[in-house]
Structures are given as C-alpha cells and as structure tokens.
Length: 97
Image 1 (tube, helix red, strand yellow):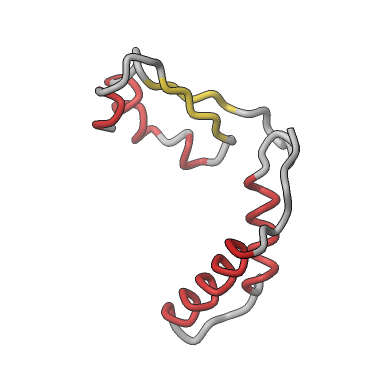
Image 2: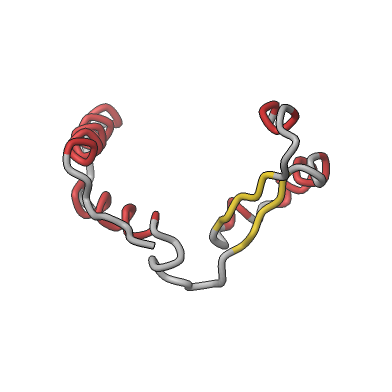
C-alpha cells in the first residue's frame, strides 16, 4: 500500500466477487486509502470475456491436475512451477480486446 502514497492518481482495481475481495478485513484499508484506491467489482458470473484470469486458472488447474492429490507440498510446488515455466515459453492462450 505504500506505493499508493507515491502516485498522484487514483488506483482502481477491477476484481471479481470472490469472498476475499469482499472481506470485511479490507474495509479499514479501503477506508484509509479512499481517495487513492478503490475496487470496481465485475458483475456476478460475468465469465472469462470480462475476467480473463478465470480462463487461465481453468487451464492451470487442468494442466497441474485438478482433483489430483500430491504426496507433499513440494511436489505440488514443482508441478505448478513446471506448468508456469512452460506457459512463459508458450502462452496458454492469447487474449484479444
């Protein structure tokens, strides 16, 4: 949040309606930075055309192994890293505005 103090412009973050984005714990922070920072909520169930990260998460879950149990956190980390590194070399999909 310290970065917001350095800008003369308002910062707007576009977020979905996830519970973490609507948590009451954020109220104090949003109140404190009310003149510099605000959330703009996407409509409920808007789909990947307005929220492209959802398509990325779907592909990530499929590539990592949705429903798969890893023996330990390190193996989950290794598989996630492998998928992300492959994505860096070859983007999963292109988003066109």
